[in-house]
Image 1 (cartoon, helix red, strand yellow):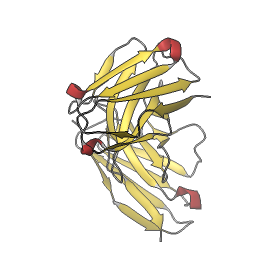
Image 2 (cartoon, rainbow over the protein chains, first blue to last red; image 1 turned 180 degrees about the vertical axis):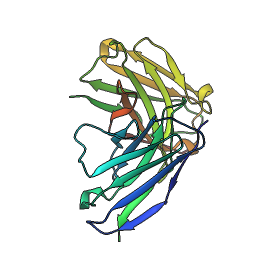
Image 3 (tube, chains in turn purple, orange; image 1 turned 90 degrees about the vertical axis):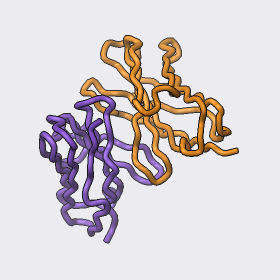
Length: 107
Length: 119
């Protein structure tokens, strides 16, 4: 089973700042990686798929990069609604596995 | 518009069998390439994939839970059913169903249903 590690566990930033989240896979997942956003009491929402493609309706301030084992989600300028938990997920090797999440909270 | 909604008991006792239903609209599970999956999330913890069923009635299960899970579909009712046997307090979680996009990713998700296992 492919294990995903996310860092940092918590990221404390202010609105307007840039957020950089990392996801590392225990073996190559090629570009088969997605990012999801989850707000308290809500279901996860797909943000980025295939490492770098924004899902429908996702603002341009969200971008993804990487391939193989190292991936990054960048939020260029944090809006108040972006404070949430972010999960990465791979589907290179079923069962698809999720990372433990990174919480982005308000500094 | 694609929507999914989970339903089932909020409370089950240890050793009981849990049955959850995912009712969806906006797509047909008889269409080639369509899949529906179940994922769970214990309170304050990460997401865990459980099972998947596709348009061709192929089924896939979490390796660690395979012996306890059964997934099925009723295409005429637009429903997918997940059963989990021998429930334990560690199975307390919010259970989500999600469509798997043609791109292969979970989108969208249902709102989730919290299941508590307690005597």
